[in-house]
Image 1 (cartoon, rainbow, N blue to C red):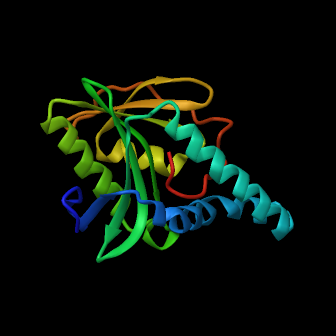
Image 2 (cartoon, rainbow, N blue to C red):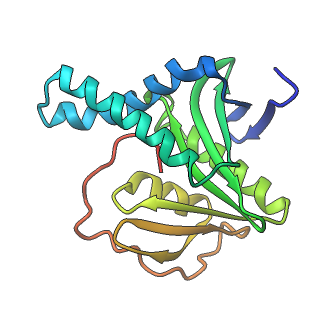
Length: 192
């Protein structure tokens, strides 16, 4: 573990966060494909076309995150010495913005993502930062997880539900209803 790596203790065990390195490119592409290619396969698109689309979309996503967040932390999430995901967050002065989290499918739906995000939310609150996230309105699993661990809705548009983390997780902060009508499509993966 390098000097810039850190351990994140969660209710689901410890995770290691370390900065992305150039040699993580193959893992990051595999992570992206694992979380996004299934929708195209389900639609019956041919594998060569899916491979081409994944290449374009992977490069586009990387550029999309790095341009508006040039000072963000781009981190690899490890558990038991193996890379299982990626975490991107941006310190925005008085707020900590969760830009993206993605986990490999075999690490999803086991409470690991929720435990990890909750620990990172507590860390931001302990540092006096307001944790924030914007989740696609179609990403129902992520929205449910965020609400369960203490994020509350502050705004919503046609694409995103904008959330803010609160310390008092057990209390309903009276957030407005999330308009999920018309958006019953299940999203694949854990990306926000």
